[in-house]
Length: 503
Image (cartoon, rainbow, N blue to C red):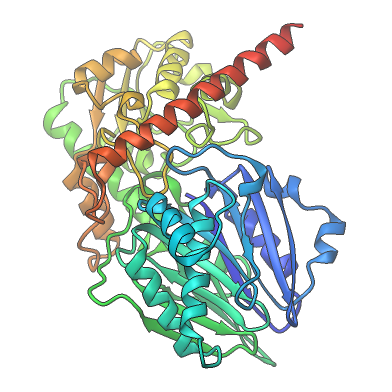
C-alpha cells in the first residue's frame, strides 16, 4: 500500500504534489518523493520519513516545472526498507523516465533474471518498483525503434508490460519533456482515479490513489482508471487513454474499504464511508441473529477507521455509541509500523482511555480488522483496567487467515492470529469475553451496496484465493523467509533501542 500522484498543469506543480502527498500520507509513512519536469529537465527530491520531514523550503524551490509525480512509501510483502528504495525511481534510457508504484509484483525475481540476461538492464535495489520501471523502459525502447515517441508507442509498451508483469500495480510515470503516464493492472486490484480542473489556459489533470487527493486539490473527480487501462497526459495537456490488456476484469482489494483508504474517498464508484456504514449494519444483523444473549451497554470504536461501522452498529442494536479512546495523532498507524516490537510499544502511546465510558459496563469494542492481534489484546486489557465488567469485540472484517501478496504487509500465516485458530480461540488470545467477526459475503455485500456495479473483489487475505493465478506455495514460502529475516532485524533493532534508552 503506497500513495501515488501525478499532475500536469499550466503552472508550477510542486506545492500541489506536496499537498497531495499529505492527503495520501495514511497510505505510507516510510518515505516520500517528488519529481517535477521543467521542459526536459527532471528535478527530484526524496528521502526517508513522513512527507513533512522529507521536504524543506529549499527542496520545494528546486522542484520547478508544470508537471510531476509523487509517491509515499509503505513496505510490501517481505521487503525491508532502506533509503535507496524511496520512490520515484529514475532511469535515463530511453528518454528519461521516473516511476512510482503502488502494489506488489509476484514475479519480480523472474523479471530481474530476464532484465539481466535478456534486456541487459541492471536492477540496483530489492524494490519491485525498480523492476517495473526497467520493464517499462525496455518496452518503450523496443516500441520506438525506427519511429518517434507517440501515444501509440507508449500504449504498445504498456501492453507489453501487462504481458510480462504479474501481480498488483497502480503506476504513475513521467517521460521527460513528454508527459505523465498512468496505468493499472489487468485485475484492478490497487486503486487509481483521474481528476480534471478547468482553467483559462485549458484543462489540468491529476491521477491519484484516492479521490480525496483529487477533490481537496481543487480538481473534480472524473472516473477511475479501468483495469488494464493506460492514461497518457501530454505536457501540453492533451489526454489519451487506451485499454492495453484484453480480457481485463475489475477485482478491487476489499481491504481498501475495510482499512486502507480514507473514509472520504470514492474508489471504483463506491464511497468508502458508505461501505463502512454498511459493514456496521451487517455486524448488527449478525449480532441480533447469533449473539442476542450478549448484554451490551455501550458500543465504542477503536479510532479512527472503525468509527462509521461502530456508529451504524450501535444504531442497529439500539444501544448508546460512545467515544472511549482518545488518539494521539502523532503516532503512526500501528498496522503499518514494521516489526512486532514497535507495534506493541506504540499501542498505549497511541490510545488513551476515557475511564467513565468503561466503568461497570459491558462494552462492545469495534475495530476494522484483527490482523496480528497485538493491538486488540492491548486494547481489551486497557478496557478491563478502566473498569469494564465485560469486554466484547467486533471486527468489521472476516478473520485474516492468509498472506496478502498484492501490496499489504501481512505476509506470513505464522503472524496472523486467526490463521490456525477458531473464533473462540482468538477471543481467548485477545482476552475478550466474546468475539464477532464479519462474514465474508456480508462484507462483499456491504461494499456492493455502495456501488451495485461491483461484482468481484480481491479477498485473498480472507479466503486464500489469489486472483492473478500465479501465487504458488513456493512463492509464499520465499516471502515468509524474507519476512522472518526482516522481523528478526526489527526485533534486534528494537532491543538495541531499549538498551540505549536504559543506558
